[in-house]
Image (cartoon, rainbow, N blue to C red; front, side, top):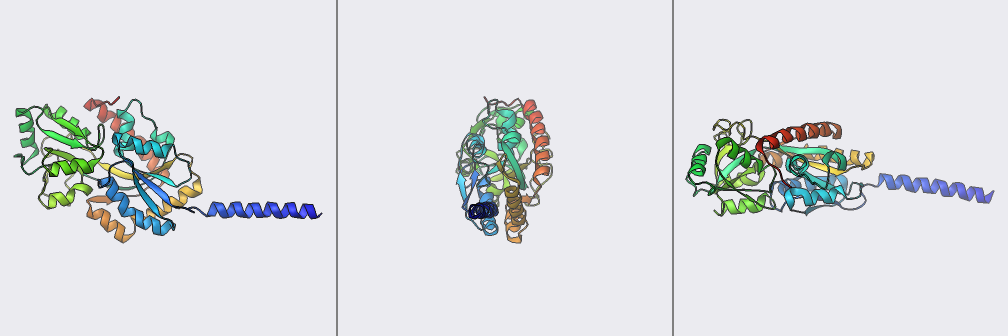
Length: 322
């Protein structure tokens, strides 16, 4: 009888411990993997949301930059991490959608290897040049490229990404030759544009807005469906005569596939509360972004459609990376 009592007590104790363990998430620091260089728009955004998520989750969040190969290095790391909620990918359209249709040998499949948690925001892309460049408009830049084939140099955050594709679209639409210079993230490319080593680049507003406002780069066009409320005097690429040179980027959080539903729920709740925190929202809007959240199911449907859309765009632009 005593043996039976001890067995029952042991089973009850195990069940209580298991239940406590399940409720303990998170019980250690979390990592947000930013697959681009420090100082770029993805990194800036991660560091805006990280502190508030830390407060809500009660554990430190470490921002871990793993730059290279248009985000592939960092994304692969997360895809192969344990599905326990402690390793999170801070992805962009380049990483989770465009790479799917530009790389023939991608070491991950977005819809198979990740659980889309939620977007954080969408942002517009702007074409800027160094002030020494004589072009005051997109048409004038095209005229320079036509007169000097290959001498106009535009940087990007990596081959095949959201900041590279507009270059290919522009060359195809305008019938000119421009030299593409890929970097391991937007930040080092921006540094070279500001320093005059590059003619310019297409770049997301969060990282470039301060330089535009300070006059250290000149804005020529918004590669978005409408003008930005932050730079209302900058025309869209469509208004400049190049309607096909258009895109919208988004920044979002992803977990490894098969992350437990209770962990997903807790992280999603923290993300939504973070984005809706007035101080965080103000900072996001201040970078030129539009804050946005979705449920995992909504975001998954959005991603399927986005991958299909970029497949059509990439095919039309003739971009393929082996």
